[in-house]
Image (cartoon, rainbow, N blue to C red):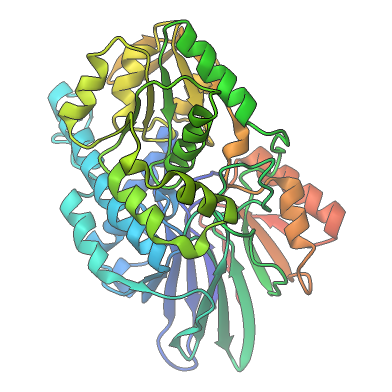
Length: 475
C-alpha cells in the first residue's frame, strides 16, 4: 500500500514530519520525508523527539524541506544520527538559514544536557543532548539546493518542485507527483503559508508576493496554525511606538523575544524607521543572538525575494550591521554587558517562544520589574514559556526557578508570517480544482477543527484533520 503517514504536526503546531511511502511496481518501496521538524512546547510533545520513526532512518531515500524554521527542520541532525544518509533538498535560502539554525540548536541541546547534569534535574543519568552542534554541522553536507519551479525527479515513482509559500525567505510548498500502477497523482504540502501581502496591515514584510496561486492537486496537506483566528487589520507601528516610548519614558527596558531568522531583521528595520522619524527615542538596541550577524548577512543576500518596501528600506538605511547605536552581541561577554547597564535599552533576543537561548537571562532579570516591557511579535505555542508569560501567569519557571511576572506584557499579532483564515480562503479559492482530500496539520485542535468547518462550509471540500501516525492511502 502506498501512503502518507503524519509523523508530526498532527494535533500540535510543531514537529512537522510527513512520510511518503510508495510501493514500486515489483521493486522496492520508495520512502521520502517532507519536513523533519522538532517537537516544541509541552513535555509530552518534546518527548516525541526521542522516539524512533516507525521506519528505519536508513530506509528513507530523501528529505524534502519546505523551510528552515526548527519546527520543520530541527530534527534533521537526529535523523542523520539514526542512519539517514540521503540528500536533503531545499531552496538556497533555506539551506543558508539551516546552516546557522541547526548548529545553534545543537549547541542549545548540549547546554540543556549540561544544565540537567549539573542540577541533577533529569531522571536520565547522564542527561544526553538530542544531538550536538557537531552532529548538526555534519548533516549540512547532505543538503542539495533546488530552485523554485525546477522539477526534480527522484525516481520513476516520484518527482517534485518547489513553489513559493511566502512565509519566510526561501520558504516553499512542495508539489509532488507520484506515479504508481500506471496512475499519477499530485500531492501538495504547504509547509507554512505566508500572508496575502498588504504593506499597510503587515508592514515590514519581506517577500514580494503571497503564496503561489492557481494550484491543482489531488491531496492537499495544509497548515492550520491560525485556523481559528484573524489577524488585526490595523497598522501596528503606532501601537509599537507607543508601547516602546511609554516604557522608555518610565525608565524601563524592552525585551522582545524573537525568532533569529527574518523576524528579528524585520523588527529592526521597523524600529530604525520609528527612531528616524522621531516616534521612538534613540536608545541602545541590542540584537543579542550568536547568529544575528550571519542571519542579517543571509537576509541581505537574497534580495530576489524582497518586496519593494524592503528594498526601499535597505536602500535608505543600509545594513543593520552598520547602524549607529545598534549592537549585535555575539559573545556571552557581550550579552552579559547588556545586563550590567541600568540604562533603558531595547533587547531583541531569541528564542522567539522563550524555549531557550539568551532571552532567558534577560527575562529572568527584567520580568520582576513593572517598569519593563516584554513585547511578543510571534506565535507562542502552548506549553512554551512564551505562552505562559503571554497568557497572564503570575510566574514562569526559568532555569529551575519560579520568576515573578510584574513587567508589562504586550503582543503585536500583525507580525505573524502565517496566513489567517480569510487569507487562507482567499488563496484556496484560486485553486483550479478542488483536491479529492485535504488534511489539516500544524495546528492546535481548536484551530484545525474550526478551519475544517469553515472550509467545508465555504468551499464544499472534503477536509479532514490529520491524526498522529495516521496513514492515508495514495492511490
